[in-house]
Length: 121
Image 1 (cartoon, rainbow, N blue to C red):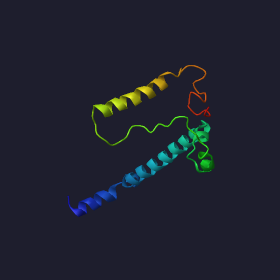
Image 2: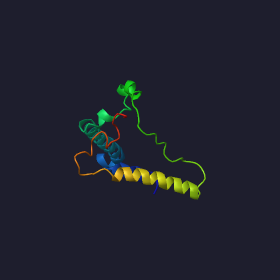
Image 3: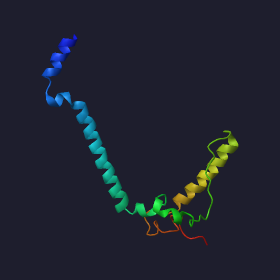
Image 4: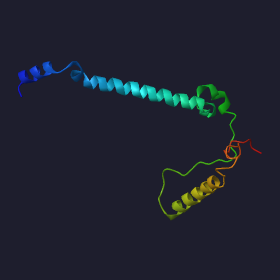
């Protein structure tokens, strides 16, 4: 096709056909803003916002947090040998047992002790 043929074809396109890409970008932005709004509404209405200590308003409260158990997790670097695998398996089994011990259908599933947020004894 020559340049002249392309110009004639572009002139015959309708208004919407010429601006399809910009319409797509605009609709994508509108849909994403709508979904973010829905997510933020669910975040605040579900009560999760009150538990989020990373918010700037709770900076003074973060120093008062105490954990009953220090769990550093498994190191991300190091040798991958039988000793490392055994250590990982023991840490995994311990945390897995704690998670399985909670009765998912009981009334105490959301208690402070079940969520490990109770005051240290």
